[in-house]
Picture (cartoon, rainbow, N blue to C red):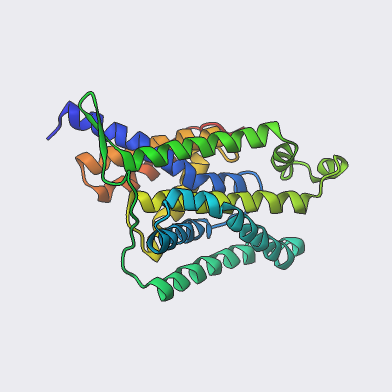
Length: 290
């Protein structure tokens, strides 16, 4: 039954969820939108970050989000190594279109199977002081477990935006897919720039994985729920647009929350993709695409 209170709660929850979705999608917006690298293994790195946060939380009692921040340098190195393998094996030979896609598919399944063999297929969850608490604001209940990831997601979006717009390496990343010759004339190595960008994308994925495990329990196959969603957000916002990623994530978050509240969760993802198709029919470059 419809009620204004229920609507308000659904919208607030959707906005908070959208902030988290933005964090999950930033890496795809960076690698797919600016580097033209279709890293479909991105959600697997998200779940790998979730399990890293779970392992540190269950073993040492560390806060999962703090763990995610501490482990970002490690995941950055991992991402840089993955790109070096991808470049040497496929991109340098001009075979990144299909064989490179298979490479990332294989990487996704390797991560998922490895986590399944190590931790099993039982749901894993973490403990933190903010999980299970809520705040009442004018009759609207705000779950702290959503509010904290929302705030971190906003901070990640702002930090990446400032990095890309205010630093030499950030501007080089934005230029690498547009004019590699001009980039070389600026004294930058395109392969090194793409390695840095890919490492940042995987580091962002790992941190968003730590956010994910504070919102809901995870299993290794949870990555499948995000493969379509993160690419939908990146395309809807406009490829390479960090601000557009945030706006698109909030739109999809609100849409999913409304559908889950009033029609059931099974419809939420379908409606999100319906919004994507409608937006692309009207503006194929996305909301903020050039």
